[in-house]
Image (cartoon, rainbow, N blue to C red; front, side):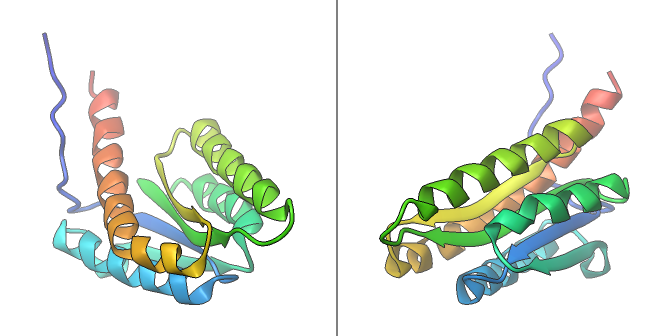
Length: 152
């Protein structure tokens, strides 16, 4: 049996990041954490492209356009949807998540969904470090996995 091992070597990978600006403080902090982690994993800073969009609902369209260029090995989505007093939270969370998944499947590109969905600002801030680090690692690991799958 051939087993494909986890590979977190980011050397030579090109990563696109889309950040929603609506919760800019959270999203910007996530980008900074992920950028540092990507560099630790060997991704060259010149191979990281950042695009910002107004909010979480715009993230899938930006991801789709990055994916369509066929210049990226993986993509990352960042932002935060924080519960308010209306149903809008549910709509934004569900639709942005579904759109992100659809882009990944339609374009056969790994997308690490780092859009936080939290009850309040405190929860969002508490999750920045872990979620952004995880998203960077997921992007690199999945880019390498898809490359290995192409070699089968």
